Image (tube, rainbow, N blue to C red; front, side):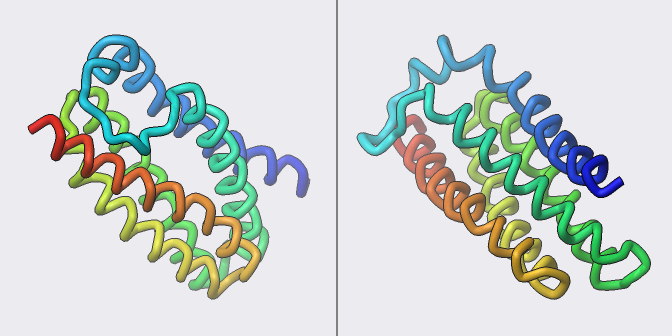
Length: 156
């Protein structure tokens, strides 16, 4: 049963990433390729593997919180915050790529960044390991926020 729960948590996060990719992928070769981007923009091929690894780490983190006991208030809070930030994660893809709006993406990614901080704090009350597994995600979204802001600035 433990492995099924772990798999379910990872799959949930990967599904969120897949949904986001439905808004992202069609716009990479045209709209995104045509944007002015800062010199520190990673190559497009890097985003898929990085996000896949992050979604897997997020899934493991979610599992560690869930297995602590759904009946506990601190677990419930951590799970709700996690789900809210996961939804916001997908909304960024819609805002930035789906709406083709770096400004809308910037607004959403700032909210996402705050939600990740809250998720890390809430997860830490349940499992230090769960919180630590979210640090790479926090760092990547911090970088992505700077990248998003730079793209908005260069293309307004």
